[in-house]
Image (cartoon, rainbow over all chains, first blue to last red; front, side, top):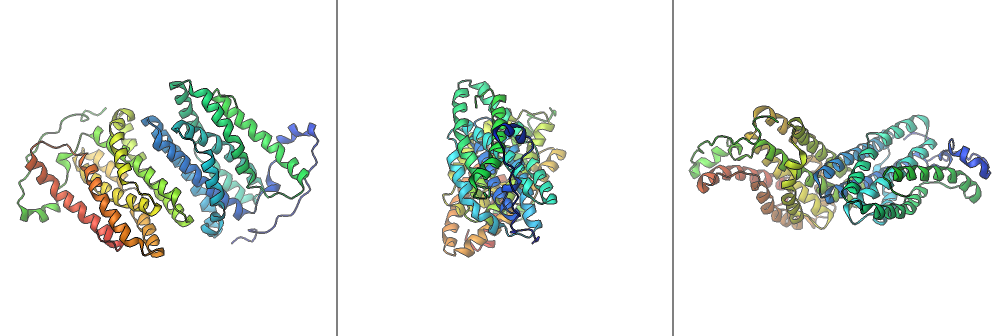
Length: 238
Length: 238
């Protein structure tokens, strides 16, 4: 096991942000200082990808039309590829999958239950919102990983195109039934809280509330802006 | 679209089998004469693979242990690869996915409901029995496809290793809880009838009952023998 696993990273003083600095800071701050150790990062991220795979295949199975089933099968394959990329890093560092993933299963499964839609198009929308937000989040969190691992993790999280096809499935569903628009807008809004809590559960806070919030806030502001753009592209109010 | 699509294949006289010929015939007969046209073959086989993917990811999601989840994620990727291989043939022949797959969705989904287990280990056993039997079946049915397509379809259906990892998952589950053995033996026996009906639904019968049965019987005898060997390797009575 590489020596940097389970080692405490040194504390770095967080820059104190005044409100007028926030917008500028959002362009450069990342979550590296609040990142967990690599083994915890990889274990949580891998467990979460199992949930992504399940969200997508459940939607695939419930979709009534072949074109949507086929597209969802393909994005499931992308989620599986990303999962396998993350697990490959566990293996490269001779980490035991069970040791590092098991502690996160309950949390990610509870998250899945809270965000699982009933109708297939809600299930696709859940996948779109949560995978989109959380992938953005984990890419930023990867800033806290050692250089070589960071690059490979970001590459794994960026493998394939998942967002584009899922966007087009929802677009097709809305085109076929425009009444879905307002329902999906509400549904997606409802998902954001649980998704942010799931993201936040991955952070290692320093315990100094104002410093922690100063680091978290600009990143979450950026992630919500990304979410809003994702909704905008579907013509949905975020 | 290739000219052989939707063309009626010429009828060939089936050899009349006496009972003592059956065992020898089983070694060489195939289902080629009862195979549907290539478009129907590919559409049904692709739709069925969507069910396989779902069976495996449902079991993945319900498995309590990381090692089993991980193994099931990997075999889901294999099922997805096979699905994409079959769909690639649809695309190569410019067949519309919806046209050829939609007619089979109801049947394969009904089959899935009938064979879906409650507990995660029943779900894995269902996947093992049904995917094993039906893959053997579709490989034999592929004998009815034109040569070049046949080779690519058999290659797609043989991609990756699905049976080995699923076998090992069930083996681990039984080792952890030997009481599962008799329950799983019964469960797997219960699955065979629905699985054979699903296979049979893909055949194009000639309407001459005795001739049809003479062709079907030796192949099904062989498939059941394969199934029995699959159960034997798990120490389960078929």
